[in-house]
Length: 274
Image 1: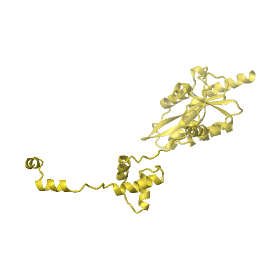
Image 2 (image 1 turned 180 degrees about the vertical axis):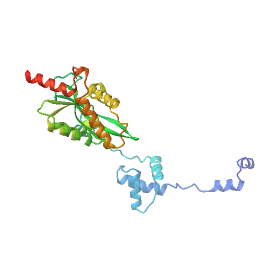
Image 3 (image 1 turned 60 degrees about the vertical axis):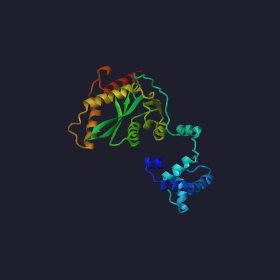
Image 4 (image 1 turned 90 degrees about the horizontal axis):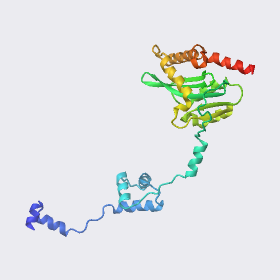
C-alpha cells in the first residue's frame, strides 16, 4: 500500500480518510427537484429560458448552462411544437404567390401595351447600391415606366406600377416578371388585380424567360454614363435622360431600324388601318 501511495503521490493518511468518508451527496439533487417540479407542472413544454424565469419568480437564480445540463443528464426533454403543414400551405397561398409563365418566351409581339416585362437591377453608388425598376413593352421595346430609389423596398415596384397605370388604356394586358419577393408580394398582386393586369412569371432561376427586360439592363449599364454624377439626384436625372434617349433616339435593327417610339406609332397606325 505504501508503494501505491508513493507512486500516486498520495499520503497513507489521506488515502484512508478518503476511504472512510461517507458517500458524496448528489450536488444536483436540490436543483433537480426544482427543475423537475416545473417540468411536470407545465407538461414538459418549458425550455431552459422559461424554466429560468419560473425559478427567478421563486427567488432562485440558476445559471442557464446548469439548467441545460440537468435537463440533458436527467432526460427532461422539452416538447417541440410542430408546424401544421396545412396551415403553412394556407399562409403561403394567402401571402406570397407565384403565377404560371403565360408569356412562355413569346417575345415577338405586334400590339403595343399588351405584353410587358418588368424587373429590377442595381447600380453601384459610392460603396453601396441604388436600384432601378422598369417596365418594358415587348412589342416595341419601349420603356413605359421606371423608378430609381436608394433602397429595394416595395415602394420601388409600386411607384413603377403607378407610373405604368397612367399609360395603359383597356384590358388584356399581361405583365411578366421573375419570381422575386416584390412580384409575389400580396400588395403588388392586389394592385395588378385592381388594374386588371394579368400576371405572368418566369420559371424559378431562369432569367432567359424575361430576356427582353434583361437585354435593356445590359445596354443601360454599358451606355448610361454616370462618371460625372456625384449625388443621387444626378443619377436620377441621368437615368431619366437615358430612358428618353433609348425610347426616342436610339434606333434598333430589329425594330425596322426605328426607335421604340417610332415603331410603336408604326404598329398603332397599322392596327388602325386593319
